[in-house]
Image (cartoon, rainbow, N blue to C red; front, side, top):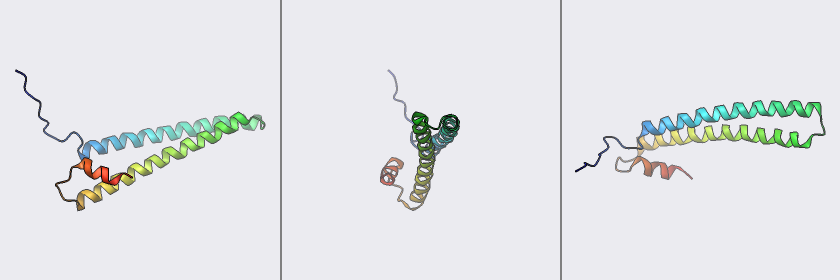
Length: 105
């Protein structure tokens, strides 16, 4: 008869969340650099043909993507700071998942 597997550590502990946040931040940096590179491409197209409205719109969209990736990094860092502050102040009976739930708007 098979035995049930019992986890030794919580599947959503602080270290795992920090690794996930680090991965999100790395991907956001990569997204930002690609968006800015694409913006430069469309900027060159607009410089060649100032009447190209499609390139202008895509150039603006690239800037929006670059800004949203920066905003996501700020949100992740803010969440980590709140989580760290909350774990120092909170009572130990609350799970980490409950603490995260309280922090998210």
